[in-house]
Image 1 (cartoon, protein in one colour):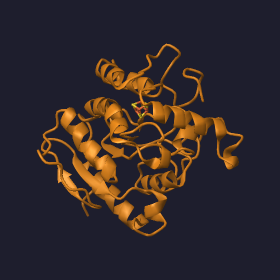
Image 2: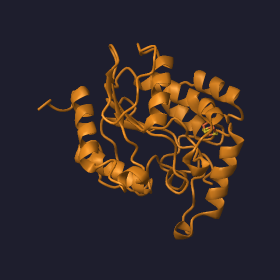
Image 3: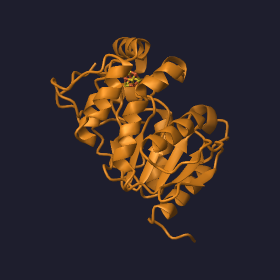
Image 4: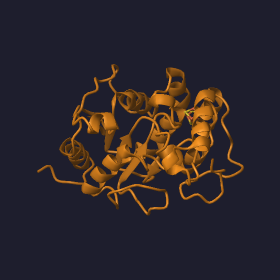
Amino acid sequence: MIPPGTGFPTDRASASTPIAQSAADVERLAENVPSLAHLDGRSSVCRACPRLVAWREEVAETKRASFADDRYWGRPISGWGETRPEILVVGLAPAAHGGNRTGRIFTGDRSGDWLFAALHRAGLAAQPTSTTAYDGQQLRHTRITLPVRCAPPANKPTPQERDACAPWLHQEMRYVLPTVRAVVVLGGFGWTSTWTALRAAGAAVPVRTPVFGHGAQVQVPNGPLVIGCYHVSQQNTFTGRLTEAMLDEVFRCAKVAAGLARTA
Ligand code: SF4
């Protein structure tokens, strides 16, 4: 595990960053946070979910053989990118040997390969790949975040873990909502969490959560256009359920909604 405040590129924490040990701590520390950078730091040292803390640290210790020489991050993954984004991308949770290894969201795994290639084609990422936190990648107009910030076994967080982590996303949404014009949501899990976060941030969301589907679009009055997209998981990309063309169309719509492209 990378200790906080030791110079890692994406680390927003220090040795004195307060550590949440419970769901109640997460609520309190997210609520009274003084800035988005502090939120990133506080969430990156969180230990509120015993099962996920044990899993992320065990994976960081045992490693995958092909990454045996890597020093795993082994901590929660914070949102990353612009602090005043026009486009917000919401995923699910970090991958055990992806974000949990590299310390940066969607970095170092096949899902990230797909996502960053699409972001680059859309002009929203500086490079087509995202391999390590040292690779110089930058997001443009865009921020990526997650409703569950620790890698879960089998990519399946429990409802209790989802709820414990929610205050981090809710507060992040409060910070970015004034500038966000499009939210691209990767998968049904993130879709539900996004609507809950938008509601918590004060957006005028529908009483009933809209139904998720690839290409679903819901305009929040005086707020962002929320766009559904199949998750960039290998399960979807390997099988052709999600193609590059489908992903490109989602980001085209997001750019139009954000005022970053013409409608034609
Ligand atoms: S999943 Fe969220 S609430 Fe649970 S330990 Fe990780 S950062 Fe904390």
